[in-house]
Length: 376
Image (cartoon, rainbow, N blue to C red; front, side, top):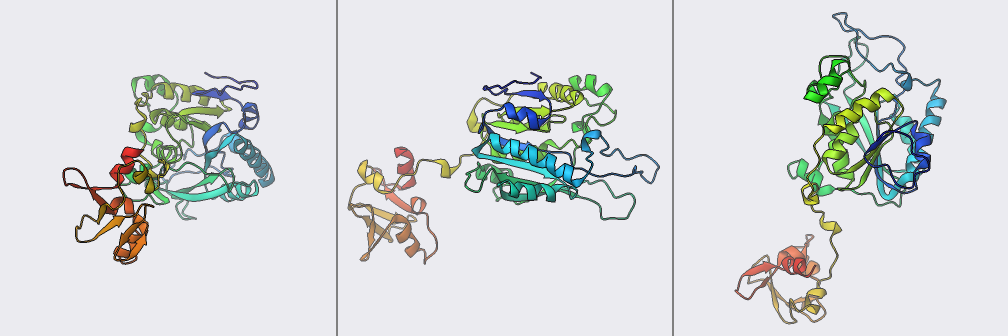
């Protein structure tokens, strides 16, 4: 679906809206979007063409949409689209914006002026950056992403365990080493429009000068949204956000001014296979989202009883008895499952749900967390 929605109360999901995001977003209801990814104009301020040593011209960003008369004009533009995105974000939502040294510091200052709360800055380190052919500066080998909540009091989604899973079980850091978009992933014009329908992108000129790699959007969308939630891209370009959102089972909305980009994005996303229907395949379980239960609830439910023994780390020589109020008692000392566990650990933090075991009807020792899971 393409076109302008006039005062729509129903979100135009999985569609591209033609127009300027500053005015298009005015038609959206407030607090309706779960995640915004924005790749705005960088205001590169290019003053001359760039040539390689072999006398071939470097294809840079020289489109009209990246030109502004002054820093003040760029700041006014930035403030307007950020304010529009802030209005439509849910309190549990967040915004990612990417930029270079040309613009990201101005964007960051305006974010803070508007009351956004910056959660992280992530450095995308390009493993295959374009060289600085003139040799007058360092090779520009990274871009910066700012991740922000709509306010300091907001509680944005963060899929911590999904990101650990992507990183071989280690907490993911804020330096992301990923290649720039190239090869078969890079969309190209001319014959590429027809060839793309056959799974090839041809050899024509770039369809979009600043196409981002899908791997980058994969991390952004997986980390900051859940299956079925709505991802908005106010500068949709060639549609990378929509393609990855579809692959990950998210709904998406793109806003784009240029009809040519809209057609490229529409064809591209139509080729993306639908995500699996089971939400369990699209995100890792987040323990912090589970219903909280006190240890005493196991006593109230009859799953444990007062006087019953629990065994620390399965060691039958280190046991404690359960008091009627849910405290554990050992050698005249009483405390919660966490407090007494910490005492037996020499003062180290202790998750009592995993370290205290009970004996089942068959004499097998099992973690009390299994009883909590059963009660849930």
